[in-house]
Structures are given as structure tokens and as C-alpha cells.
Image 1: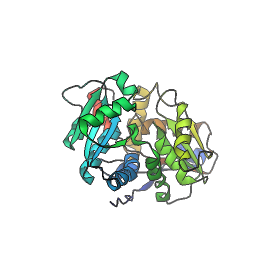
Image 2: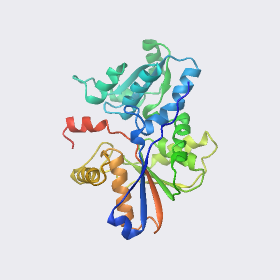
Image 3: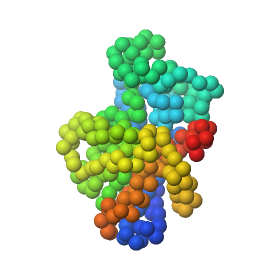
Image 4: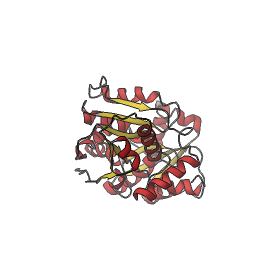
Length: 302
């Protein structure tokens, strides 16, 4: 199996604030990788799909919440590259299906629901054995898609950046994308992550653990900002929603408040507060996730 990386635009955006602070900000439009396998999910899945085929697996099994970008992308990837897909979903089944799960089902994904207590222990041998007994053998992709093959894929985002830069920024949920960017930089330039969940200190350990597979756990060219989670994962408020709406109106680039909105809000705030030295060039990775807007609208969160 050969999966070629898409060519996505690098778009400079302009704002009086950037001019005042002597900052250049570019957006790497990874939201345009694929209509369904969008953004960082494409890169996270790439080498997992190649490995699954190499090992002879016909079925992919993974985990996620009911609005998971990863579940959505894995279902689409399975359909595109010829795998059966199983999504183990946190919580109870709710019908009719929300837009994320409905799309995953249309792409052929079978669902198994786990109560929240069992879900916390989802990698326990007993639960995995139970899943194998029910579904047969499968290639297991972890929740969020973050493993050593995912960061190998995400490292390939860096060579696609066609201008010199000082900082590369990404939203952080599990840390896999940021770990890949750090690996791709290999000590050149600085990676800045924005935790989208409360209590994101654990991300440092996650990232070092992922990098250790490549003997790169001692790289120190990164930092995770913990100040822009807006109350926790999938939490938002009127201020953040307004920021996302204004950003799209000004730049004609859609963002959402779960991941990319928090990152861009953080970047703007850090620029205002002189975190970035004058004459810095910043690359913000647009990791996609726009399918989640349908679920946010359904729940009247935006």
C-alpha cells in the first residue's frame, strides 16, 4: 500500500496586531488533506494503515467518544483503503445517531458501546480479549490514533512547510500530533502545543513516551501551554465562539472551538502579551476537525 501525502496550502494571514508586534503568522491548511480523513488524522492513520495491511489484517478497531474526529476519520479511511472498521464508543447508544457517528456508519463502521467505567479500562487484556471474541482478529489503533506510527506520519507535516519559521503550533488532545512535529523538527525551531483539556500536564509524559520509540525523548524544543482549555475538553463559551466566528469572517478560514479555535485564541493572546520575539515567523497547523461543527450545532453549543 502506498499513501501519498497531499499538498496543502501555506497561507499567511494578516492582522494589525501582527504588524504592531512584528510577527508573521502562516496557517498550514491540513484541514484540506481529504474531505473525510482530515488534518492530523490523515497523518496519524497513514502508517497504521500500511502496517495493518503488511501484517495481513482486514479489520481496524479503535476507540473514541460519540463526537470523535478520530472515529470519523478511521471509518472513512477503512472505506477508502479496504478495511472493515469497528468503533468502540464511550457511553450508551443514543438514537438517532449524531452526525459524527452517522457519517462513520455510512462509511461502514460497526459500533460497540462501552459504559464509562469499562471504557476507562479499555486496554485491559480482558476487554481486548472480549472484543476479539466478538469481532475476530483486528488491528488495534489507540484512542485518538496516537502511537509511534502516528508520530512518524505527523513528522511528515514539517517538510511540507515551505518557508523558514521560528515556531510551529498545534492543538493538543493526546499529544501525538505535537510529538510528531517535534520529531520532524529534530531540534530545529520550536514546537508549541495548546492543551484543549484541563489538567493537560500529563501530555508532557505522553509526548516523551511516544518520542522514546525513536530515542528522541530528551528533545527539549517544545512547550505545552495549559491556559486556553476554556474549562476542559469539548468545553466552550461565548467568547471563544465569537472569536472563531470573527476569525472565519476575517480570513475566510473555518475553525472550530474544540481544537483549532483554542489554539488560535491562544496564539493571538500570546502575541498580544509579547510571548513571541519581534520578527518571529509562526506556523499554525490547522488540524481539521471541522466535521465536529455539525455536532456542536446539534447540541446548540455554538
